[in-house]
Image (tube, rainbow, N blue to C red; front, top):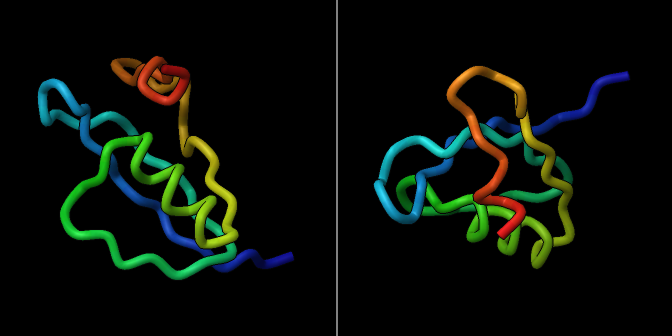
Length: 68
């Protein structure tokens, strides 16, 4: 099975540092710069797509931004 998609980097809304990578499937997005995790999830869902955390247990990565 092949699922076409893209990995998108996000930025922490408070520090501007990386907030992790997410896999996006089922939609085409044109987001300027690095969105926050919340912006990415909202845009993907609005476009009818699916978003999944790429590697949520990588050291130094926190999923707390998505759960807020």
